[in-house]
Length: 403
Figure 1 (cartoon, rainbow, N blue to C red):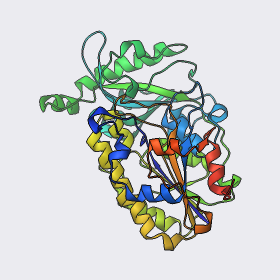
Figure 2 (cartoon, one colour; figure 1 turned 120 degrees about the vertical axis):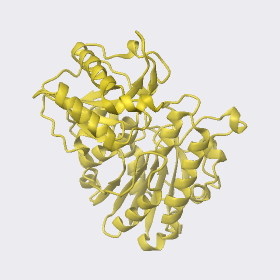
Figure 3 (tube, rainbow, N blue to C red; figure 1 turned 90 degrees about the vertical axis):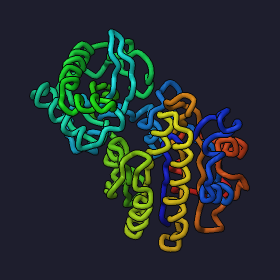
Figure 4 (cartoon, one colour; figure 1 turned 30 degrees about the horizontal axis):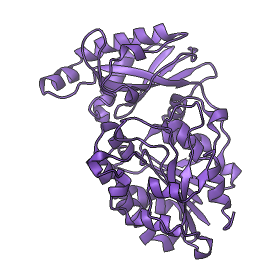
């Protein structure tokens, strides 16, 4: 048996007046998702434990079979693993966003992605920051687009930080780091702003009327985690496909091989078909592949209804449709389609509500047809609810009809 997870990040949503009371998932043309739901085990999965923030870090740990209440280390250490950055036991990693802030004493968080800055341009800025502000204890590492890393060797990790995507359109000062060591970070952010405001790349952007990457935002901190490998737990060989360092970092700790696909961006312009093609090829040798697609989440953060519908239709046609057309190559296979958390258009950030999933098998005798199309409402109507969410991975591997 082969096992495939297709994770559409932030796919779940709330009903919208603009869509006549429907969600983007209900409006999107998704015949292949609907097929999985109608022929398979449809339900809701609770990926965010009570009291924890509804981030992709917590949610995807759940979906890969980890209990976040016992294993969650913070977002940045997971990304560090993907980037090949080694953390000592006393080191603290922080997610470092390049962002666009407004002016004034309480600058508005205009864009937590700095206009989805291109990776090469971002690298120039982060490497410049490291030369200007870094030393043997404080290091900046370039990542992809707006997503980067700051490491504080022997630093503090007991402070409170806020994800920048949670404060879009709000004044940023009340959300600056607080607690032990926070003054060091705030000073670093102030110095970085001075450097970035004056950088020629940002001067030219302002002249062209584009959003400059004029500040950094530090958040998601933590020390290196201790996670057991799911490859050992289930006696499998597996792979991770994602453009996002967070998912590749979780995959690293889970024992999965990182499968590099050309042209994947973590945005709506990603290489959807390439993810499917590389997954299919990997499953000829591997037992398990986890495909992560970031685009619906980014569209949710932007409040882009049309973009989210478009992302869902591309996932359905170019990823899932391609895989189902080629399913004979990897038969027998179980496919788990899921959303890690909602990223509602109306909120423009993550929510902790349970998300829909569908578990389908190419083996007809394993199927438990729901008869419903794939949507948030139908997943709830199914009456199937997996909580805590980390149990869903066991269901995928140990599925027995009638359980």
